[in-house]
Every structure is written in structure tokens, then in C-alpha cells.
Image (cartoon, rainbow, N blue to C red; front, side, top):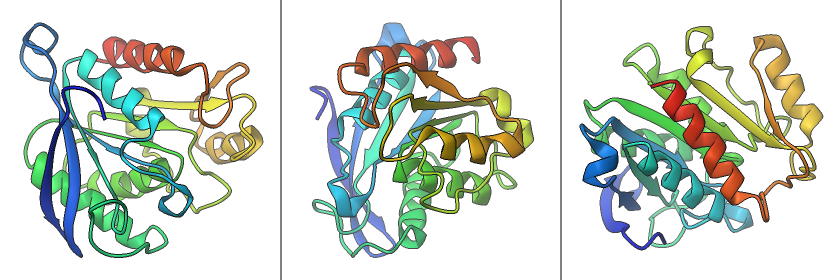
Length: 213
């Protein structure tokens, strides 16, 4: 958990959903840019809102003036329910958006399985409300039917993948991104969990958020 995170519980589709919220400092925020909702990796393989990549994403958003919200999918930690192959997890993410960002500018982000769910949320939301930013790290292409990113949001999308990812091989991500003409940012030497490169990951995300403000 980041040192300044505030923990709370909201009512999700299956009951309680644990969330952690990090707020920008007054200097970073100015006027807070909005709320970033960040989804964690696969619940059945140890994924939680305390995952290091997820925490790194939260720090990058906070650094750039966003309020960052992480949450545990159903069946993880103190969140009620059980794993639902991405269907229920999408409902969980949408419930967090509705509760934590009902009318604020919205960013979506996710790591691995969480990136898959974030893309599903974007598919559901983009005709209903604007999504200002989309950050996808290690998206689980090839493992799940990941929804495409609407063309109008490509300039606001950051798709990052590790060169040496052996959980989601880089060619699978290119196969997903190529038909969309969606650029992929490849981090040389990085593995799926960006061991030893979290600082670089944070700086890449922050640079994207600053330049697409």
C-alpha cells in the first residue's frame, strides 16, 4: 500500500468492494485533473490492488494531478464474491467508476488481466461518457478477447509492454494492436512484472499523461 492511501469499502454487484484512494498534493493537483480507476492482474494468480505495477500506475497518476483509485476484484482480499472470468470483474470496475467518478473526468488503467477488463469497461462506457486517458500495461492479449480501443481515443492511449514478457508474449500484443494501428511502447529488457524497471515504467506513464493533458 502506498503510504498515503485511504482505504474504504463500497457496495459492488456482489457486495463489498475494497478500494484504496490516493490523492495528489495541492502542488501537483492545482485543480485535480480527474479520477483514474486502475485494475489489477488476474485474481487467481495472486493479483491484488497492492500489486507493484498497479501501485506504480497509481503513483504516476497522482504525480500528474489525478486522484487514483485501486480496488480488489470480487473474491480478492475483503471484496465479496468469487472469480467470474472477467464478466463480473467488468461489473466491479464499472461499479467503482460509478461510485468514485460519477461526473469527474475519467481515466482507465490496468495491468495484465486488469488491462483486459479496462478495455471492456471502455467499450461499455465510451458511448456514454468521455474517457480522458487509457493506460494499458502488459495487456493480456491472446489470453482473453480484449476489446479494441476506439480510434478516437488512440492519441490518449498508452500501451506498454515488456520486451521479454513471457506471460503475455510481445507478438500477441502486436497481433492485437496491429489491426487497430495502435502504437505499442516496448520497454527493452522488461519482463511481465517490470522487475527492476518500475521507476522507468512510472516515468513513461507520467510523460504520457503530461504530454496529452
